[in-house]
Image (cartoon, rainbow, N blue to C red; front, side, top):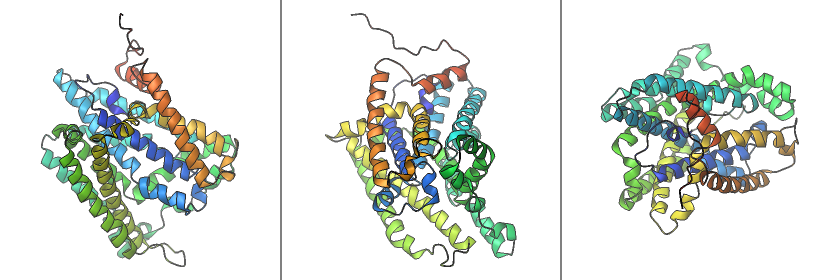
Amino acid sequence: MNDASGVQIRPERIEFVDALRGFALFGLLMVHAAEAFGVGLSRSTDDPWGQAIFFLFGSKAFAIFALLFGFSFATIMANQRGRGVDFTGRFAWRLLLLLGIGFVHSLLYSPEILRLLAFLGLLLIPLDRIRSNYALMAIAALLFLQIPLLIQWQLANWGNAFAASEPYFASSNLWDVFKNGSLGELISANLIEGNLVKWSINWSFGRVCEIAGLFAVGVVIQRTGFFARIAKDRGIASALFLIAGIIFAILEFVVKPMVPGSASDGTFAIGPFTERAILFQWIGISAITAQVGLLALLWNSPVQWLVGLFRGPGRMTLTLYVAHSFIAVPILYQFGLGMAEVWDTQTRISLAIAFFGLQIVFAHWWYARYRYGPLEWTWRAATLNDWKVPLRKSVQPA
């Protein structure tokens, strides 16, 4: 999440990156609200509100997080190298701590992304040792080709039954536990089944390779200072938005309708499934590229304040992301208030927008007094094994 808010000595914080991270946090909240934090996965969300949210943020918000995770890692490592410190071991420990936070979080909400980012984040350590940006971009391109999925598809064509079988998540009863289970049943199911389903989804849809590729791109973006430039250069932002927007429109409105979906009889076919998984990856990548360009344009306009609203939550993404689940799940799930069966998609999304507005206010209030968010400070202090890390801002003399 907000990986850059921790360890490094910051020469200058790029506020536009905070806004991007806050925008991604907002997108995740919107998707989770549309799905009723998992309960909605067991029923259709094909209403206009749900369709709009998935069009804007589905398979996109998490991709921005992955991109910024790589960016933040490179920021930390570069700053520590500037001090003559090899931070490799400490960063690995930092990822292990994030994995622990994600594990606890997953007991309540297993679709969460912290475990995935933390585990795959280990790939950043060898990527950091590749000093050529061209080589990193070549690695990212290879990862985006989704070679493992293509190999699985070919094995299925050769008659391998396991390769051709329906993904594990498709036959899981986890969604029924989300909808009807007690708190104890939910925690028990999330402990093992939730992890199996999580990895099945991310492997089957190619997100493992996609996230690793976005990590590599994020490292290159940090090394080249791209975010700092685009935040000041309307020409670059305009070109990025226009080119990526055209590619997205072609993929979404021309190519996507031509790719077959599920069979009419409901049987699973590995070919169409793989084609759509790879297509959705490129739709997502082109969409987030266009979104970054658009946000950069707005950042350089009279409505910069609008994008700036995301900065506060963007500095506190770990705290707020976990808070989303610990507040929403007891409200929506049957073991709590069971409001997922009462509120329709429009109501959930409207309430989520209002909730995010409160988080903007809270973040503004908090950072007027403190240096880091609550979980951000805990993560930083545990990473450094130094619990004297200052949290409260120093009072300036009058």
